[in-house]
Image 1: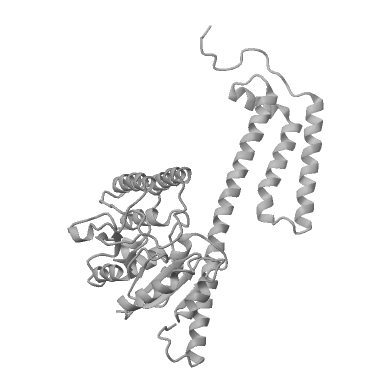
Image 2: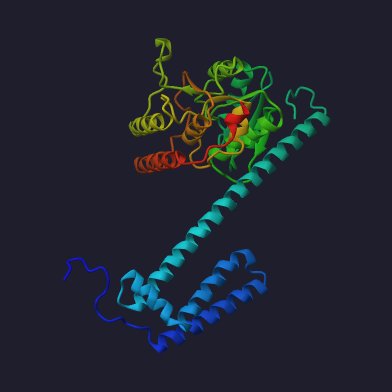
Length: 141
Length: 243
């Protein structure tokens, strides 16, 4: 045969029922946790969407193992569990990147806020000096 | 011509008063703003004692953010041109005046004071001696920035600059907090602004030591190269249309 196997030739390893049940339970608890965090104002809705999608994905994977097996086949892996882990890993990578993007935006916002505050204070100082009769001061607002 | 000279300062209580006095002496017509980048010492108090305006950032944000504060102030308060210099006393105000003259004569939008470019011998004094790691860093940045901008720069990290309103409006919106000096040059050239270097005399820092250890220098250089590379793929803004 070919020296470069493009796909696994051995028979596929399927998810066991036990794995599927455990995954489904985890997914349901996970989504409940997210709902609870939103309910208690600990998580803003706009940041929860992505987590909710992740939870739904987990649930779908547990309920319809055929989906995962299709993915495994497309990836060329024999073991569906490996496909599962790969997908989860990629998902986490994406989420981490998403947070870096959010963090960068917020860092820029914080910087601008600090700059505005600093300049506001400088303007206050200028106004004080104008009104306070500090006659020798040459600075203007 | 209304001119603002701003001085970014981070824990420079020892030297700030002398720098302010120097600016007052050589740039008599200019307003002065000290941007205190979240100092933990008496920088703000010392500056106020000198009778200059002080914009105190509530926490340390890095040189880029401090410089941007100055550009923002200059833009909003309607100054025609602005200049900045380091607060540690390395930059003589008399040299800043020469940079400003270039901007005022509209020969350039952004003028950089270079300690390396040396057309006349009188400037090639022994005042400034760079360390070994700084020389390497300077060489690397010089090479990559020249490559990126297709314009020759010798002193890429110089903190002595003068600028007009085009630069103010660009830098007050786009100024990298991490790599202020180098990226801003790249940005200005990409936006079609006229950037020019003028040879200046700089002094050895009065006190304290540079923050760069060899390892930090290496990381600093690496980061700078990555920043320049990424900067080449940034979308252009609109500064060209404004001209």
